[in-house]
Length: 123
Image 1 (cartoon, rainbow, N blue to C red):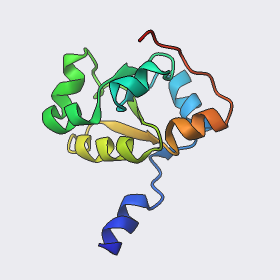
Image 2 (cartoon, rainbow, N blue to C red; image 1 turned 90 degrees about the vertical axis):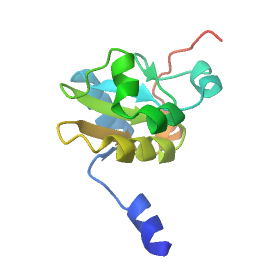
Image 3 (cartoon, helix red, strand yellow; image 1 turned 60 degrees about the vertical axis):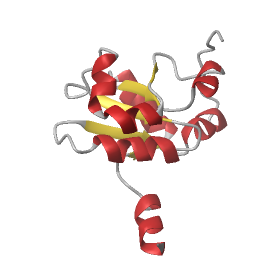
Image 4 (cartoon, one colour; image 1 turned 120 degrees about the horizontal axis):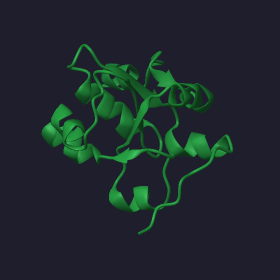
């Protein structure tokens, strides 16, 4: 059990700081927000596509394709509140070797702590 927890939270080069995430976004990375609908409605990264983690669990890569996303061609930044759900989504999607997946380390909490903007959504 402890080994699994260490593996889950070990530093991964695909875990990006908010500053590194901004650079990836500026370079054209797709953003997928895996939080629940009410969390997403409260505010998200500009340009983010909402695909809840449960949908990724059920459909895998098909969930992204249904939204018109082609992550095989671009970097994909996964986002949630704290970084845990987006990391789980990254693990689920990592079966496709051609995808360049990244996780926002610390999630929306870290994003806001760095004073970065949110796009307000209409409920």
